[in-house]
Image (cartoon, rainbow over all chains, first blue to last red; front, side, top):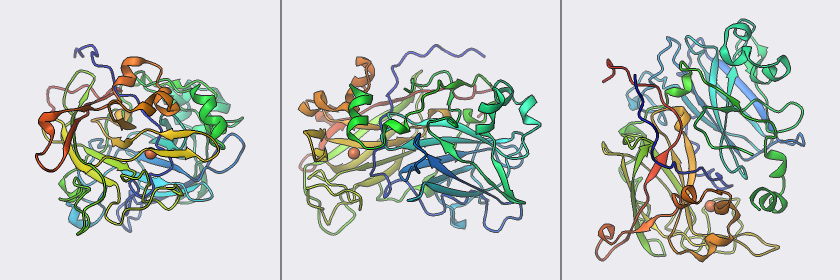
Amino acid sequence: MTVPPPTLVPTPPQTIGPYFGHALPFAGGTDIAPDGHPDTVTVHGHLYDGEGDPVPDGLLEIWQPAPDGTRTGAPGSRRREPAAGHNGFTGFGRVATDARGRWTVRTLPPGGIGYLSLCLFVRGLPGHLRTRLYLPPAQEDSTTDPLLSALPPDRRRTLIAVPTGPHSCRFDIHLQGPEETVFLDFDHGFDHP
Amino acid sequence: MTESAIGASSPGVAARLPRRPLVGVRDPEAAELWGPVFGDQDVGALDADLTQRYPGRPHGECIAVTGRITDRQGAPVRRQLVEIWQANASGRYAHQADRGPGPLDPHFTGVGRCLTDDQGQYRFITVKPGAYPWHTDFNAWRPAHIHFSLFGTAFTQRTVTQMYFPGDPLLAHDPFFQAVTDARARARLVATYDHELSVPGRALGYRWDIVLDGPAATPRETDA
Ligand SMILES: [Fe+3]
C-alpha cells in the first residue's frame, strides 16, 4: 500500500465566527441513537474557557462507529426522519453549546473501540480542535489504548467521561487552564497556537 | 499580530486558546480515518440557490460560486456535504446576535448547502456579501467573505473556512485572513473571477477550489 506524497497546498481553516447558529445545527443533530433504542447513552457536558467561564458559542461534532463496529457511516447524516432511508444510525451528530456552555447528545456505544471522536469549533479560534471522549468504564482502555496509555494520568483523565447514572455520563471540555483537555493532531493538521 | 489583535479586541478569545501542545495520534486504526456520509436526502433541491428562497429577489450583485474539492493528492471529494453561510449585500447576517448597522434583507437568509458531484464540484448561486464592521470602538472591518463548512472522506479532513474575493482592499487589514502566515496557504482562501462561469444576464462567476488536509484510511483493494 503506497500512498503518493502530498502535492497540493491545503486550504487553511478559518474561524467559525459568531453567526453559524442559523446555518449548521439541524433537527435531530443531537440524537445519534435511533428513537427509543434501549441501549441509548446520554452524554452531556460543559464547554469552559481558561477563566472557567462557560463558552456559549461553540459547536461540537461527534463521529463514531456503529455498535457492530461498522465505520463507514450511512447517507442521511443530517436527516433523522425515517424517510431518510437508513436504519436511524449514521454515526454523526452535531450540537451547539447553549447560553450556559452546556451540550447533550444521545447515542449508542461504539463497537470495537471505547471512544467517540469530537471536532470542536469555537468563535475566535483560528481553527478547529479535535479530541476524543472515552466512555466509562475506560480503566481497561487506559493500558491498551495507544493514546490513553501514552498519556500521564492527569492528562489522560481529561479524555474520560464520568458516569452520572446507569445510562449517562458527563464530559467537560476545558479549552485552557489546569484541566485543559488533551487536543489531538493527526499528523497533517495545521498548527494551533 | 493575529492572536493578540483578535484577543485584545474580542472579549474572552485569549482565554479560549489552548496552551498545551497537541498530542499526536499515529494510530492507523483510528476511527477518525473514516467519516460521516451524506446523500441526496440531506439537501433540498433549492438549497444551493440562495436567491430563490422567497418570491422576491435579494438585494445585491448575484454571483455563481463554483469549485472543485480534492484531497492533497488531487483526488476529488465525491458526494460530500458543503454548507455555507454569509452576510447579505449590506454586510448583515440574518442572525439574532448580529447587531450590525446594515439592514436585513427580507428576501435573503444567507444559508445554503449542496453535495459535490462525482468530480468533486460544488456550485452555489447567491449574492456577493457586504463587508461589515466587527468592532464598534475601532476601525475593524471584515472583508467580504462566505463561510464554508466542508467534509472529506475522513473525519480528520473536516474543516471550516472562509472564501474571500479577489482585489478586496480589506484583506490587508483583516487579522483573521492575515492569521494565516504562509502566503501560499493564504492565497488558497481567495477566489478568482472566471468569466466563463458568469451566467449571462444573471450572475458573475467566481471559482474557488478547495484542498482538504488530513489523512484518510488507506483504501484496500477490496474497497469499491
Ligand atoms: Fe462572517
